[in-house]
Amino acid sequence: MTMTVESGVLLRDMISEAAKVGLALSCSPYWWGLTIGGMISTGAHGSSTWVGSYVHDYVIGLRIVTPASADEGYARVRLLDNNHPDLKATKLSLRVLGIISQVHLATQATTLGKEHEFGDIVWYPYQRKALYRHDDRVSSNVSGDGLNDLIGLRSFSIPDIELARASEDTQEVTGDAFGKCIRAKVQTSEFKIAGFGFTNDGNLFTGYPVVGYQNRLQSSGNCINSSLGDLTTACIWDSRIKGNFIYNSAISLPLSKVKKFIEDVQKLRDLVPQAFCTLELQNGIEIRSRSALTPRLFEDIIEEVEQMAVFKYGGLPHWGKNCNVAFIGAINKFKHANEFLKVKERYDPSGLFSSKWTNQILGLDQSGVTIVKDGCALDGLCICSDDSHCAPEKGYVCRPGRIYTNARVCTRISSNQFIDI
Ligand SMILES: Cc1cc2nc3c(=O)[nH]c(=O)nc-3n(C[C@H](O)[C@H](O)[C@H](O)COP(=O)(O)OP(=O)(O)OC[C@H]3O[C@@H](n4cnc5c(N)ncnc54)[C@H](O)[C@@H]3O)c2cc1C
Image (tube, rainbow, N blue to C red; front, side):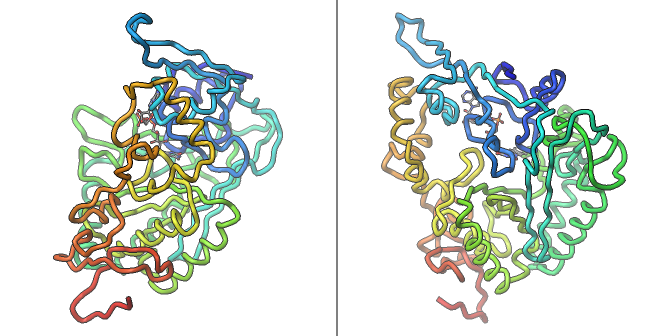
């Protein structure tokens, strides 16, 4: 069954409209404040090893507006169906081909039966625990009105968000790793008791399994309704307030390499367990709690895990959520990159929809994706090669990684501490 969606429609509205006619996207991002155009342009995904994990896997056609000559009215509308040779390029277009204005999706009816279609694993290395989530399709006549209102995507009062950030900052400044670990453990326990935001009937969590329609269980994000005017409540990552410190690097690893990667991270965890208190690894690899702008406790560990995933294990960066470092050499990991560039040349030969940044990540601008300046490694703009790329005045200097020794990371030293190099 198919549906047609205007590209600016929010994921929230799209899945709820689809549900009305008995359709569901089995895998979609957790946050529903994304548009269909933005999602497919950056390759956004849910979590599954099945085909159908990426939102663009469901796209069977689209309408894209590309630049054109004055004779053509400066714009050319192209309609692409499933047999069109350019469809693959236009699906994950990084915006450089033009503006997608409409998307045709083929979704599967919710009545199809499959097992463990959706899987999600969150690994808490410090706690030596992993949280498994398995979603199975059931027949649509199985009763249940489950709802996912993921805690992290709810609205919170701004003073509460700012207080949480202030306490986190204090722990950072005072080097209170113990406090951070306690806080992370308490939070995980609270989330577990609260069913991570799941309720069985839309109100109360009484236990698993939670049964309901996929459009109510996969994506959520009630903070999108936060009061914008008076700013009394907000999403915890809202940049207008000094909110929670959140950063996700998202890198997909080939399944064949996941085991070795996990073993390396375990070795690192065993060396510096406290460094992993607030670090969560989810599925492929989404590193949460990355530092940026200012050095954080265990900056080096976060940088090492990231460089390990990208360079040692050849991970592919999510195009919509990474720092510059993850994009170094990324385009060379895609064997059909040249085909994509040929479509780009045909659709937008003058580069109207390109920028220095898109040229850099597509390998068209030889200056590369990194920006080298003081402190650049702390912001993911470069891999450090000099202490000035870290924050030497705060004790952060550039050193090799501990397990992946090819990594170069900003390590915190103090005058009475020896570092192995
Ligand atoms: C809280 C949060 C949670 C997230 N969770 C996930 C997740 O679970 N899984 C995941 O994969 N990703 C996730 N993401 C990342 C997200 O999927 C990407 O950042 C996505 O690109 C954002 O979509 P948007 O509609 O906000 O697009 P924008 O941020 O507005 O745009 C992203 C890019 O797409 C281009 N673009 C947008 N619309 C069009 C169009 N119509 N035609 C051509 N180009 C277009 C823009 O120019 C830009 O380059 C999350 C992001 C946030 C903020």
